[in-house]
Image 1 (cartoon, rainbow, N blue to C red):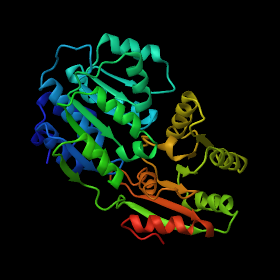
Image 2 (cartoon, rainbow, N blue to C red; image 1 turned 180 degrees about the vertical axis):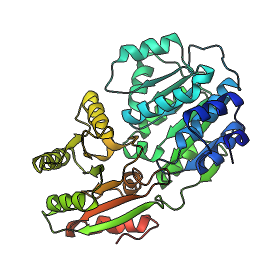
Image 3 (tube, rainbow, N blue to C red; image 1 turned 45 degrees about the vertical axis):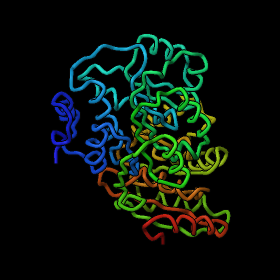
Image 4 (cartoon, rainbow, N blue to C red; image 1 turned 90 degrees about the horizontal axis):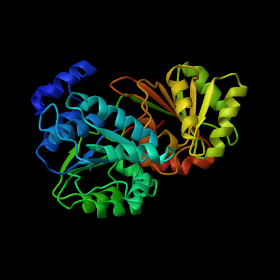
Length: 368
């Protein structure tokens, strides 16, 4: 199957070739035709399966109807909501590239950045807004954004937005949107809360599930038993034994992330730390250093690591198991992407056993 068979116009498919896209992923093959019909869509797919293009390409197609240009309204016609600023930057970058042939005007609005440039971009007129819920509410309260012309709403990583407590914000955004609109919801897991959210936001939606279980089949999972207080030594052994050129290490707290990062640096390992208390500039620099190989290990909390776009990450280490079992899916979804193999190692002490059981009950692969 090729992108030309999915209903996209020649101008977009030609651009995809230039961007290096050869054939659609499963979520793209299923979602793009469904979105083009105008139906609401609820899709379950892991991170790294191409879901940004799965919703972004048909949105652009519908906004421009295959034309190279269109009048630019002052108010956006499409809105994409994401849980974190990192994901907002990533999605905005991708959609801008996809929409370049039709001169798509898109803006990303998120916290940790100045309001003035965002307000200026909105005043000049945009087709599409990528936003985090909190900053979008700031703009709504200041009346610097008009959502009355939104035709298509996308909730990306809906499960994470709920985990982060954004449900009240999402409901307030919903009140500012036209009732006659198309809604797309993408999530790595479809929990009971996500199902309720979908019921509030969508109507007669088409359901798509290309998750192949819950976790990517290309990921090798391993549990490393450790004694209480022995995780630092175990982490050093895992990093040494796997010989991975890059590794993402998850900790459950900001303070714990700082402590682990300091221990790695003292051990002679090039490491950087990102979490919610770090400035946007510091987080961007740390991620850039990691991508460019200036540091080999990135230590992060779940929220800070959400939406990280890392092309090839061979190793994920759960220094602390996630408190919510579904977060295991998001963590290990960082590796084993685009058909490449990856490794996920979890350091489990006796006091972690109850959390391990919850994860084992969720995922469709054995955790040994």
